[in-house]
Image (cartoon, rainbow, N blue to C red; front, side, top):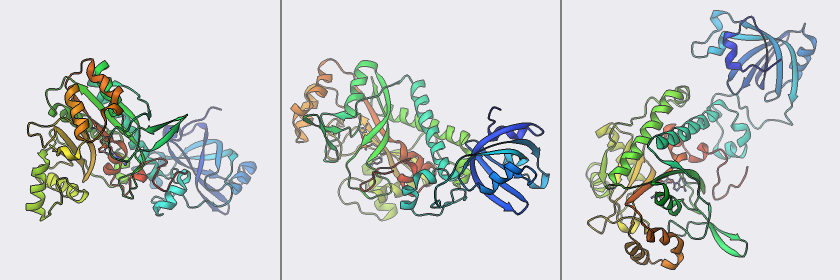
Length: 440
Ligand code: 4AD
């Protein structure tokens, strides 16, 4: 018999089916045994009676997370047992045959069938394969998958071509020291800190490109929003008038993602108690200096230096929500000194044509216009105390004709973290890599 998926059984009362999946919960009532069977589409109650001798013996042996396959009759359950929000509760299966396909060795570290796992972060990550069986944990990755899909669709619909760029590179792209150096045969190489140079090259060939790809950062951070390997949603576009064009495009992609998540992941949002995501037609845009003034006036927060800190980002987000009912805010015109060498300076050369996008208190994207003139770029490299000779192949792009262009780098895991209000970014990553963690 061909396998039926659990979500299909709601309409199959009176029919004989074969189901396969994991034992979610097993209740032995002496005579009757009840097992909740789980597959990727849902959970169904199974009833096993002693008359079905072989099935009953298998049900006696079965334990949580055993993989089983059953055949039996789908029956409607009494109305009093039907839950309004669970279509599968309409039916159960009376089991006639049961086969155990795979057993559990030893004890499980925790019971993944619980609604809330209630275990600490190290336990959750050490036992990642088991934790991912939990419905609520599993839901994070359904939302994540929707984000990736919607991003790609939104970008394609705006004429962007999807590209994949090398992750083993010869030069660090973002400056600073947060790169992983690796041995590449007899030479040194780096793991890409961003696809920055290659996506700019993509503009020279295709005008508009986007990439969904791994980014590596050797940061010794122990925060709730940093990991050492993440998936960047990057984009770069040519023939821009100014950097507002880039913010418009990013805003469109974010609105599309939020709309699709609200429409297609409503049950998961409900489980995480998320009522709405405020993504208005126009996200507020204010200069960084204005943001720092607002923090001073309204929050009595003095900022050391010229950049906003994580606390400031939380406060300015709160202000945007209060003032514009927006969970998003663009901060613009960052000082030259805190931006990479490729960033286009503003008319006032202390500042840059750049922005950060803050979502529910956390920076999720950085972007801006790039310098596209060869001489200006060489001068900027020198001003940043770097050696133009280390960037020869990058600089070559600007010797063969490049339009005004710009783009962004967007952290995919931070988006899902903030949508679901998850404490740590690591919970939003299947197998996270941090300073201490290389397994599972
Ligand atoms: O601000 P970043 O470093 O910008 C760039 O990579 C530029 N090349 C972007 C551009 O096109 N100008 O990183 C971009 C985003 C951040 O806003 C954040 O969401 C995410 O990438 N990110 C991290 N996410 C998780 N862990 C880390 N260690 C991250 N570092 C950056």
